[in-house]
Picture 1 (tube, helix red, strand yellow):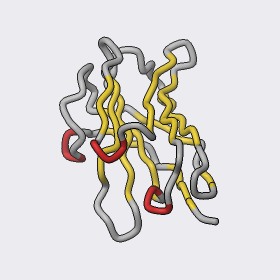
Picture 2 (cartoon, helix red, strand yellow; picture 1 turned 30 degrees about the horizontal axis):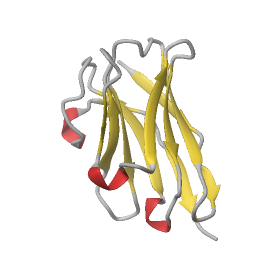
Picture 3 (tube, rainbow, N blue to C red; picture 1 turned 45 degrees about the horizontal axis):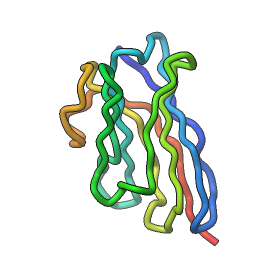
Length: 125
């Protein structure tokens, strides 16, 4: 069982930034593809970004490109999601997930089997 723990959420004003962290519990992230998803109230969970475990190739949902950056620090066993210029519509619970594979095969929820508990992001003035 692969377990993940997210942190870094909070309240931020529109235009502000947050950096979310995803840390594994009981395993190392080195060779796993890790994705970030988000789920706003009364909406389905949607994929945000994924980073490959082989060569750190990154993938983004089109609407996230330019404002969100996914990265990995293997020395810290952590995957990050840097979010800039946040908008009220970015408010959601953010989850990291993995399928246990090394490659990113997509940003659909059904492609991922292991999830963290999520971290809440609120964007409000």
